[in-house]
Every structure is written in structure tokens, then in C-alpha cells.
Image 1: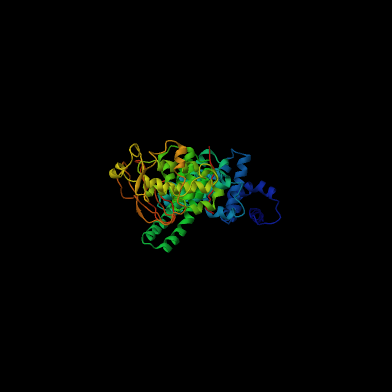
Image 2 (image 1 turned 90 degrees about the vertical axis):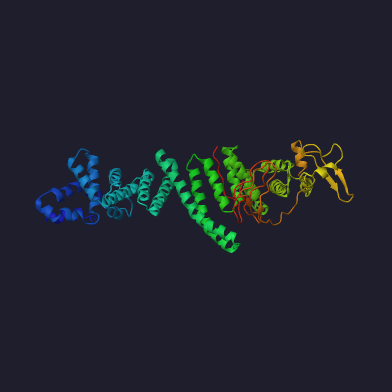
Length: 496
């Protein structure tokens, strides 16, 4: 009779018990079942403990007893015994409707760390299970726990599982929100975001490599299909990098550089321009950033900018377009490719500020005429120039084809910003198609090397021509995309 009564009390499915009253006597009930009179122990004992759900209930009774009596020796003994026998499956079954509250997740975490690095596979697996249990119950410390799990998985060569644990770090960090994480846990969360971005970028790069091969073989449909497969992975990488920014990550310069690089791989030079502009807010004299800016602005399609003009805002640097175009035309050697670069920058500026004083007076043709007047050095041609014209540094000569005579041109490059703008007043209205060609190398620049080929078709990736000894840019990324060269800030993608 006593065994049957005790068995009904230990059974959580027995109806009629008031939960607070039942919880108050559960520790004593389990003491009777395990260490009480011999008949009760023989009839109940460990067989009762091994029934589904009983161990979690016994652990809860022990934890409540320790809260009331922290020095109770029997409760401490039971804690060690019950937790050592607990399986992850028992905990998962008990946590279907919410994780147990009368449970020492800190104690389980300590057990996990003690066992997880063991050489014995069984002990290591138990340690992993304990850490997974602790992560479910201690969300404030879960990032660090999942990081340890990921490290063990990587050590065992299981990269997929390690990536899954890293995703768990991201999930729990978003659930808790980074601002409420302790500093060490937030650091783990931010590193996980960077790692996930790298994983996603690597996945996309595999498709991108195949797309570039298809581009080389002039198989444009295959290239577009592979680009479409790569895009979701690149977008995931960008999303993780922006979560890094929103989570108070401190390496924002590197973050914006990486986002711009990913947009370049996606053949989206406009969003690359916006992120490079944000990066320049943190370091305005970084040479690599300025070279990337050259490339990205050189690659922005006019039509694309017209479509999203209202969304670009201050992050499209109109002053850069104007001053860079002037500096190109003021160069000693200006050929057709340099002219195309300057012309493109001017047209971008006109899209953004059609009524601005610094761009509205530009008219087609003046730049082309300037280049014709300032063509390659020709001693015989310059010898025909009247005395005092075209003989100094940067001097020019204009030829009147109708009269067959040589007329004096403007004697030298513009000396002021206003004079330079006047030299940009006439521009071609249409750029037309472009073919693949070698980047021109001007006098005083470095010798052309492998990787200097640039794509000039559609909105392909290309680098600006070399100017005044400056390197022309990175190796071309073929296809429809960025032409390589080129406070806390919030940016949004305009490519929607």
C-alpha cells in the first residue's frame, strides 16, 4: 500500500495533486524511494527513476532543496548522481513546452567543459551533450558555449557541424539582442557574424568562378544563371556584415571595404560606390580605398544611377566626379580612354545635379576637342605653331581643317578650378559599346603587366586608365559588374 501511494506521488501524470504541495514533498519522496525502507527501495528505487521524465523531476526536487538548504549533504550527493546519469534526450523531451526552471544550467556547463576535451569519445560526447543543454538554458552565455562546440567540431574535422554551431551563435545573439550580452559574449557573437559572412562568400565564390569561366567562353546565359546562384550567398554575407555593424562591431572600416568588394563581385558597382564612400568616412586618405573608388565610379552605368537617383543621397560623391574629371583632363597625356573616363564621371555628376552650376553648363564636344588639340607629342606639328603658342608645358595647337592652317590653341592646362570646368563643357551624350582592350599606359607610368586587361562592354568590370604615374587598377572582373580600380554610418542597398 505504501509503495503504491509513493508511486502515484512520483508519477507526474497522476491527477489530483496540487503542484506547489507536491513539489514541497518531492525531495523526501525520492529519498524514500532510493534510500528508504528496503521494501520501498526494492519495489520503486532506480526502476522508478529510469522511467521517462522522472529524472528531470528528481533533479528539480534536489535543486529546490538546495535553495532551501544549501548545506544539505544528501541533496548534494543526489545532484552529482542525477546529473551524471542525465541524457540529452531526457532533457529535450522535458523541454518541449519550455526549458525546466528548477535546473542548474551552470552546473551542467561545468560538467560539459570538464568532459568535452576528453580523448575518450564517449566522455567527449557526454560533454558535448551537457554543453548543448547548458546553451539552451543559459542564453546569456550561449554564444561562448556554442563557440566551444564549434571549436571541438572543427578540431574533429566536422566543418558542417561547426558552421551549424556558428549559426546558433548568431541566432541566440539576435534573440537576446547584442546590447544585452556581456562584453565577452558580444565579442563572440560579432566574430561569429564575420565567420558566417566568410562562409557565405566562399560558397558564392565557387559559383562566381564558374560564371567567370562561362564569360570567358562567351556563354552569357550560363554566366547569368551562375551569377543568380551566387547572389543569395553574397546577399547573406552582406546581411551578416551589416548585423556586425548593428551589433556595435568596431572594425567598421574593414567591414565597409568587404561589403564593397562583395558588391563588386555581384557586378553591382553602384552599391560598391556607396560602401566605399562610407569606408572613406573612417579613413579619407587610404590609397586602396581611393583606387577602389576610381574603379567603382568608372563602372557605374548611367541608366542605373538614373533609376535610383533619389535613393543614393549624400553617399554619391559628386564633388569627386567633378574634381577627378578635371584632374584627368589636366594630365600631360590624355588619350581617348582617359577622355572616356572623364566623360563618364561628368555624366554621372549631371545625373545627380542636373541644375547645379558646376555641371549644368557642360556641352558635348569640348572634351573631345581638347584631346584632339592635346594629342601625342609631335615635333613637326608643334614646329608649325606661331611663336608663343603651344611651346610651353602643356601647350596645345588647334588645326583648322577647312583652311588647312594651324591656329593657336589655349596655351596650357587650366590654372584654376573654374578654368578646368570650362574645359569640360562639351561631352558626348552616348558612350556606346566597348570592347575588351589593354589599359593604356602613359609616359611615366609603370609597365603593363598581366591583369591590366579591362572590360569595357555593357556595365562590365574595368579599371580607369593610368594617369600621371598612377597604377590603373586591379585585375579586371569580367561580365556585367564593377570595373576594378576603384561616427558610425547606416547604409541601405539601392539595388532593389
